[in-house]
Length: 294
Image 1 (tube, rainbow, N blue to C red):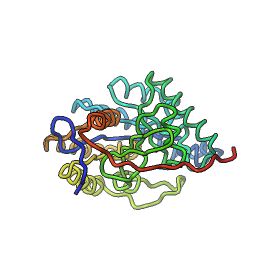
Image 2: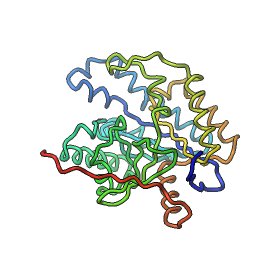
Image 3: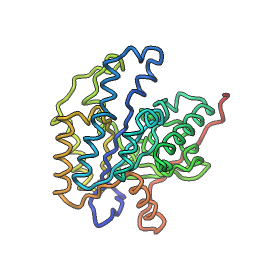
Image 4: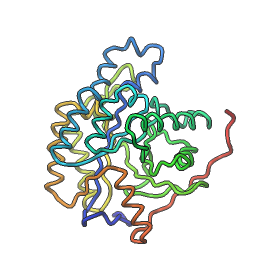
């Protein structure tokens, strides 16, 4: 059913990367810049991510001996350097996710460039590493984003939803590698509920959410795709939910022929396959419209 599966390392049937977006209170600051300080309960829910969930997540990764990927807004890296430093200390990838979770497709040319550059500098200052990848906050990738990422040396994007396997975004500046996911792999729909953040849906159990995610995993395993959840520590890092994730990682490893890797490693492997001619990606052309007024 996947016409062009990637030849994964060690004869793996699929690639898996648990990606966690550590947004913390950035989303509250963005939504309510003048009132965020008064929204104490919502702030406590979001702080749960860096302060409680991230150590729990890292403990699971150490248990299984795996390295994975975190996407962190620059503001969050500056506010919670201890959480980001712990990720780096354990060998995980920390890549970019905006500065204050701003939406690139709502910004001018100048503003998008400014906030992207500021986010990359903030992360590198805390981690000591140049971010390899980027995910647009709320998937709000703009018509400028691909070219800006290439200009700033970012090697892959993880914002789009156009395939089950990697593909290339062709621009006037070159080709950007896309590692796609989709809303069905996001933990916001099953777990998020907040009046202050204007999202009120019935909260699902961990079992219900994982039933869908496991179906996605089985399909990717059968046909050679990528299983990339888009999760948030303050949601999926809650005790009952992460206990189930800990168990499910064990099930994946027991199934076998699964390559669990950081996104930067997946991107590097795909680039090597392209260079060697062992795999040819689909190419999607991105034409940028004329420059806007600043």
